[in-house]
Amino acid sequence: MFLADMTWQQVAGLDRSTVVVATFGAMEQHGHHLPLETDALIGSELAKRLDQKCGHRLLILPTQWLGLSTHHMSFPGTITASVDSYLSMATDIIGSIAAAGFKKILVINSHGGNVSALDVVLTKCRIQYPAARIVLVTYWNAAAKELAAIRESTEGGMGHACELETSLLLAAEPQVVQQDKLQPDGGWSTSRFLGKDMLSGGPASVSRTFAEISKHGGVGDPRTASAEKGEKFFTAIVDRLSELVAEIESGRIDDFKPVGA
Image (cartoon, rainbow, N blue to C red; front, side, top):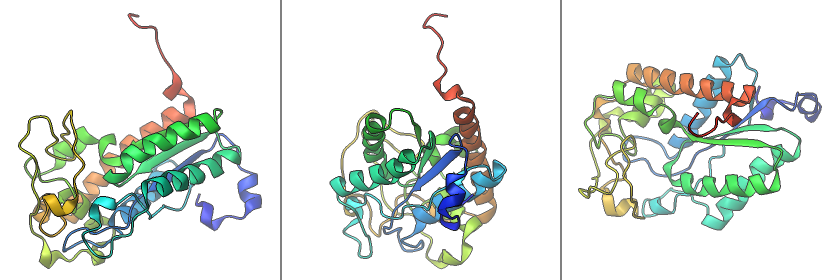
């Protein structure tokens, strides 16, 4: 079910235990071959496929396209919120649906720059809406093991406008991919403390702009991307997300066992 297509009366009639899906993307540069809307397009497609997988029993909010993209501002066309504005905006979006009485909310993030801010947003919402269970997941983390088994690029090949994102858009919106412009770009730190890839993070982090680590806005190798692989990526991600939905619906997400048991 898509919130934007419904009347307020229809929303009012929904069971408040319905899982609400709020997807957060971005509007930022994605190298030479992918559009600025990449993260929002992927997020929207994931939400749609997840709803289909779950028998259309979810309530899907419109994807938020404005992200925290200050590190991409060297590339024209990027639109970013400030940190404070983003925290307020995301808190208000999630808070609006929690204030309407919905108690189970799944926040799907499709932009790396949003991660730390959304963690703070969940803390704020937890304080303001203690009756709501709000779960945050970044889509590539949800199925990291499965994505690693499908990928063809070597470590460093998945970062931004990479094998993963390009494959997903080739599967979902092939007309927006400029396939004649695919080329590797960017670099990963040689430090043993810093991450090497979307799927292989490190224990430490450094805030950098993309102008510092990339020539034309990408990080990774999109030359290995394909629509067929994109479908496999989508299936792996949606399968894992549907399992997460089931845990939220059943309440298992809040089950604990004693330490040492």
